[in-house]
Structure formats: C-alpha cells, structure tokens
Length: 268
Ligand SMILES: [Zn+2]
Image 1 (cartoon, rainbow, N blue to C red):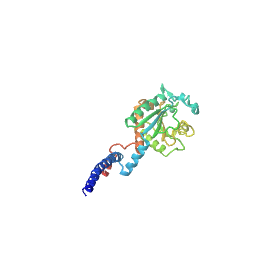
Image 2: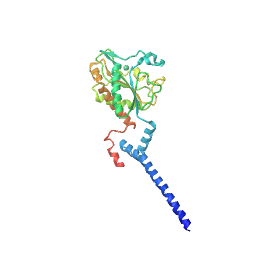
Image 3: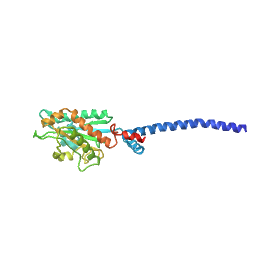
Image 4: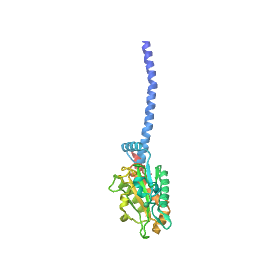
C-alpha cells in the first residue's frame, strides 16, 4: 500500500511542472495574441472580430508601401516597349522644368509618408515590371502656351483596372482641391492621362492591375500663380500626403487618426 501511495505522490509531483509549463504557455499565447488584438481594436475602432481580420490581413500584406513616380525622371532609360517616351523630358516654362518640380514634390511626399511609417519607393519614368504597392501616385505638372490656363486635375486608367482606383482619386482630389488655392481643371483631362503608359495593362513595365494608381497634374508651371504654389514643394506634397493617408486609413492599412476611435475603448 505504501508503495502505491508513494507512486501516486510521484505522479502528482510529476504533474505539477507540466501544469506550470501549460499555464505559462497559455499566458504567453494570451500575451502574443490578445494584447496586439486589443491594440489593433483600439487603434482602428473595431470590435474583436474585425480587429482579428484587420490584424491578419495586415500581417499577410506586410509593411504599408506606396510608390511615387517622378514624372519624366530618367526618361532616357525607358525600355524598348516605351522607346517613344525616351525624349519626353516634361514641360519647361519661364526657366522652370516640370521634372524638377515633380522631383521636389515627390521627395517632400516621401519624407511625410515615411514619418507615418509608410515604406516609399521613389520611381523614375520607367516603372518595374508589374510593380505592386498599396497605392501608386504619378507626379506631374502641366505646361501650355496659354499662361492664363490654371488648375489641378488627376486621372486613373480607363477602363478602370480595379475598384480602388476611383477611391484613391476621390481622396487625393478632395485633399488637394480643398487645401490648395488651385482651380479644378478636370475638364482638361486628356486621353494620354486616362491611357497613361505606366498604368496600361498591355505593357510589361506598368503597375500591377490590382494596385490603385493615380496620375496627378499638380498645376501649371506656365501659370504664374500655380507656378508660385508648386515651387514651394512642401505645399502640394502635404496635400497629396493628406489624401494618401486618408485613403490608406479607408482601406484599413493605416489606423485612423487619434480621436476617431475613442468610443471603441468602451468595447474592451
Ligand atoms: Zn508630365
């Protein structure tokens, strides 16, 4: 009998470390899942199920990435399929080169987005084969013979390549037209804008058809007032950044701004 009792005691004492290990494993599991889930729910103002979905999707998609194309930059490097564009260096007016404006705005935009934790690819006129990102913006400025013509406009590819192209356009247009003194120049959107080579699925060097992409014409370097606005690159850049961040928040890739989520805390 005493041997049996001894045996049971040994079994009990052997069980204790196992229970302790299980307890700490469960605690670790709770820490690595529930805590980030709670943080996600609070940041996005979502319930537990939505938070789990957002967390999983963002985990699978990886870091938030935006491609910014500097219109006409390094045009001579276009591949054979775009050889006709190798001499398209962009507009020039009153000593100002469009490509210099495009680059200055793109660099400011890159800095603003990176400060929000977004990974930015600064790209020249020729884009990588089927380039993919959460969003893509092609930065251009207009130049025409008539110095009175002015304003901002944008275009995505038509026919639409995906459902998010139009959403991206809505956010960028809203931010730019509300925040700048520039007029809406939508009536002058050209066929070369809506059939932009870098969005056109018939080519190899173009944006992935699932990546929302927009071409922006920031204003006219041939118009004195537009030109003065564009030469302060931080101004147009901050408006594009504002629209882009709102778009990334809309599609769940960036958490909403503080203050939008206060009521979500009550659910946790
Ligand atoms: Zn251009």
